[in-house]
Length: 241
Image (tube, rainbow, N blue to C red; front, side, top):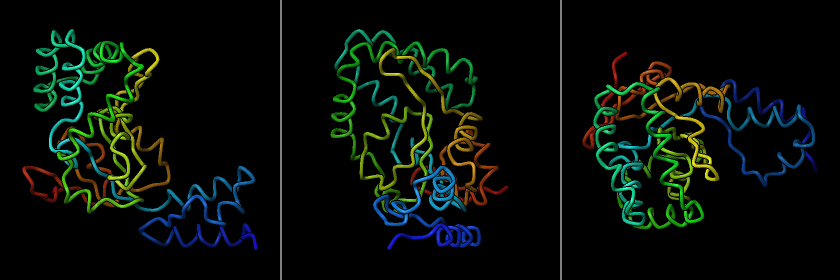
């Protein structure tokens, strides 16, 4: 028997009183019965994304290192001409970690580099798949065990690269930089204040229960979270606010 809209409304009300969102599989009859109108779709969207959720940075938090830098090294082995960009990549990485690189400068330099990396874009998906076969051991088991289906991962690395990890992350809620694989254009840089903007756009009804990161570059999300934690050298420390 189909679920009525009144039943869905009741679930939404329960979500508002709950610090954890209620998540239903897409095949659940609730979705089949309610996705027939825009109003119903909006209601179900709140059921999935409303309330409080945990948020994780990726690089140096879930992943031991900078995945985009490791991917660049991987691509250098495939495309030797990229070797000439190595000094720039290393300099930008150091400045990024020291918080000395402006958002504008990082975008400018990263945009030029992405166009070079995806020149052989027909191999992009194969590269990502092979990269994770070689580097999945750098995913930290303690975080893989922590992450749940309702959690969110947000990163400055390209979303398409992180999505390549697949089911080991458990969640499909991934926000990252956006690259047009047809042109190599960096469409969006998910960095510093842009992270908070991207999060609020993707999950406008969500409040952050806990946020885990390795960097104070993420201060906008640290300030937005009920609780925030700094991940350094295998230790998780609460950030006093």
